[in-house]
Length: 596
Image (cartoon, rainbow, N blue to C red):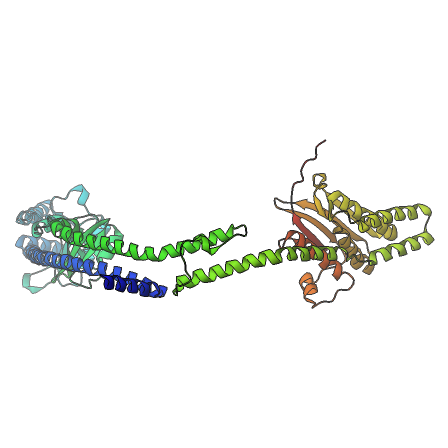
């Protein structure tokens, strides 16, 4: 007993240490072998034997019916031969042709009576009517209104008989609309002249003919039939769509096949009527076949069901032995994702340190990784915050002093060229600019304060350039209280003036627009007279283009925004409608209302 337990324990250990691929293959192969073996055995013995039995029975019936149908067609052809050789028919048609006169009513009546007598000889009653078309008249038996042919169809039927030297011709192209026709040319027998006297047309009721000739009843119930020629249906005892007929009339690759027609399955067997080369189909409802072998199928399916249940139970047990360890790993991952820094592998009840398979390695590596990440977070997180804050402060201090020098130069130039009022405006604006630039009280300011800073800068520049500089500013007052990083817009306006106005003698237009959508706030500076090179920011950051006075300010603005708000925001440069456009994108946050 102890040896058996030890052996079982050893086998379990060996299996648990197998790699994942072999474990899955063991489960899959076991299930497939069990299910496939029993299913194929049941399918083979049930379907093959019963289908073969059904084919033999149906093929015999179909062959017998095809023989009957061939005999019936021969009888109709024999009847047509008797009609065209009838003395009355020959005499009247010969006289009509030789005299060139219209047939009198008496001769016409004799022809109709003769045709009617031949029609009555058809014991199967499958003939609908008989017509005899002469030179200037058409004698016929009674024709119901629904079966009468149009004149053009009658002409086409007689044309089909030409060239056959009086032999019988079966016309199938009107079978769906008007029925099946036998047509043959009536030739003169007297003195073997064999010249054409007229045409004999016999309309056959194919449905009645097939009902008389077909004997499809068997142990599986009453079957259906279908007669076709040259990929077109002549007659069918069931209603089928054009799509079903196209599929049904495709060549057979085996003696029988199971065909789905209009949502019903049929067991289809095909035969050929040799004299006319028609295809003759027998269609047995396949559901009746299933009913006849139901008991046998139940026995086989019971065996298959039992094998499936056994496979499910066995597979569930084997798979569960694997998935519980995967579940443990998923629980560890979820716990680590929401962990507060106290993750510990020992909190889980299974020890994976001695496992050597893939699951054991995954747990061991994850535990090691989780502990290392915890340590990195605790040690480095605060350092990273400090570094980021230092980067922000360093970028904020990189204000280009060139603006201050230009301003002082402008004051000196204006003092020599104009009066004290203008100098006072410039000095007042300059004082506001210096106070705002040197203030370190906050990293962000309300939007209206940033725009006031820009207005003061434009006051100085408009004093310098007079009417040569045109500036407009559009901003909704509802946006004035939104906090934005300070000193963002003025460097863009300064760059626009420097690289547009100083290089042109015409009027320079600068438009400042502030607007928003549902998620972003846009501050846009547009100027005429200059353009931005393609991918300017990327080239400045990579060093492929060296800044010429403005590059440090642009990259400064872009980096400050991205360090503060993330990679989805920043500075975007492009050209639009002959304007160089510098667009700042910030998150749009509705400011909280202040209490009165």
